[in-house]
Length: 432
Ligand code: ATP
Ligand code: MG
Picture 1 (cartoon, rainbow, N blue to C red):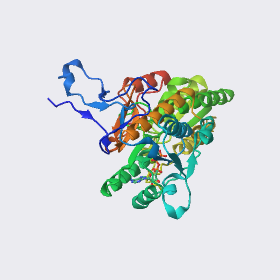
Picture 2 (picture 1 turned 30 degrees about the horizontal axis):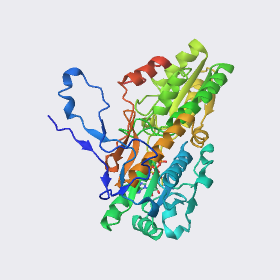
Picture 3 (picture 1 turned 45 degrees about the vertical axis):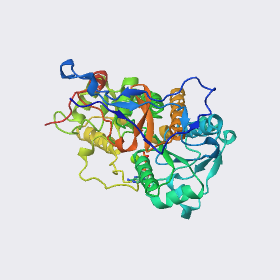
Picture 4 (picture 1 turned 90 degrees about the vertical axis):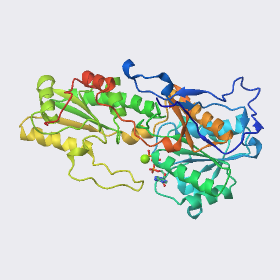
């Protein structure tokens, strides 16, 4: 039987300073943990509940590593847009300045470029005045970028501006970059904390229950699917085709299909499908049109990559360049029904940027505030090399080296079976 262990974030050293939150709040977190097993097990397989690991809970610590009044905080946003970025920037700024009274907060512009001197993107000083309304808009006031930057140069900039704590708001690439900064900082023996706030609209980080912006994204799909349905119903054999985000996991497409169950086909990366043949998607679409004269199809951008002859390599960030499944489906549906001598009217919706650039909804805003505040609590206590995130409904510190695995939809799960049931699509649309 394996020994249970508590998984903790790295720390820079002994916390010796009293938290200025003393008196403001009546509860500190110092030694609590949450079980890190979110997989269900058959009772028979459950040898012992003791072999489950635990994650350290996030929350304000009574003793701090940093003396707040001497602290300079840096914030950077990298990668693609996601609803809630400005909310996180605001929460980090307010919590640092108002709750802890740090010396100053610097916003580095254009992602990691802003931490490399040769780009001349000077940081801006963030205050409670200039950030108080930023959550009312989408995007990121700090701007963003992709592309690799030199870690040593980034650390030189941190030293130059006297940054003690760096908050990295971004996706998998950003947190890999954060890990490199942690390693560089360790090598140079510098007391700099690096804490990430993970950003992925696709909600695809393993162990993290929900990422900020995901819920806003799903909410935004509701109207789009309704409109696709209206378009589809307005024409003979209308097909409302909606291309949604989801590079390697189809959480948005699947959740959108459950939220607005006018969807008849939901195509996700986790469930490969064929286009042609007796059990291919096009045959099933034809049957649907023959029966109902309209159909709504939702496809995640990473679905159906098996249909393309060759992958197109990687982009500047090292992400796989995906073939455009939305355009392929649109063309294939048109060509198929033409060959079948059957009228079909495809209306194509590709709302990706419309969704990514939205402001966060209320629940995501609340989540962003909690993530931001807890990232500050962790960093002030000297925690580093970690991200904050929700796990089993509790905010935890997840060590960056544990970030990496994708959370994907298990086609055998009840969740996916519910999608199959709600759409009434065949469980398999493959010929072999
Ligand atoms: P998105 O969800 O939009 O892909 P992301 O954070 O993954 O967000 P990227 O463009 O991949 O976005 O990366 C953002 C930054 O992180 C880039 O500036 C890049 O230099 C850095 N980065 C990406 N991959 C690595 C890596 N393997 N090692 C170090 N830094 C990296
Ligand atoms: Mg990425």
